Length: 296
Image 1 (spheres, one colour):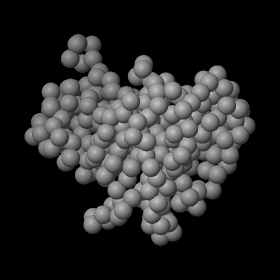
Image 2 (cartoon, rainbow, N blue to C red; image 1 turned 180 degrees about the vertical axis):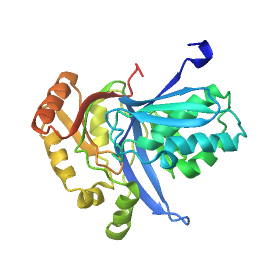
Image 3 (cartoon, one colour; image 1 turned 90 degrees about the vertical axis):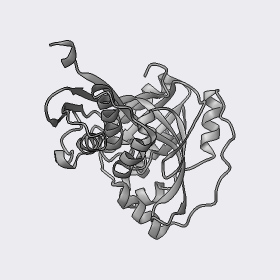
């Protein structure tokens, strides 16, 4: 293998919404949001190498139910980047899918952001702010934060990112009952059944102590939880199992679900909790992870 054929690897880590407040509906029909997003150290892997055309192959433990290649966010992102930059080069794209799809973890959008970072290197393209805005129109509200891949407070329609100083290596257990939830369906229920909740006070700064930070997060909420549970009732069971785990300080759903997380101060307790939940629910996806890891 020549140096030019060595794959460029970009990770697409799981995106975790520690809180998610849904705010006013905008003229374009979308809602503005306020969310604190951190990234886990578990991730999909995106590889790119040069070739004449753009192709996409997918494999891995969570690849079985991915959409057809032309409908895949990764393929769309690559094609869109080529058009917007008038790039005639191709790329062989391979995605190892390790994370549940449609699970509230950023999923296809995180993978699309990773392929944009990788193709930017391969094609030597500067990913300008204008380019980001054009790509986000097709790739969704999480695209901006997934592209930056840093802990952020996210506002607006996902396009306002405020960098944060938050604890590193926060221990968490992620659980998905392997039920897919489409964001558009959850928002549809939200719009029909839920009034905009009263705005909560967001801390002006976040503690760098893990225990106190979790207490701060606990005062907030995910406004999509009830709509998601109405579509996927097993989420309630997942939250109950996390909340009853020894050492779990907070259990909550991420994004539009169905993945839920539990936050722990003690990593060994997180590992024990994950093992117990996994052994009693063999058909669920369960993993221990660290958020905002120094090693990712």
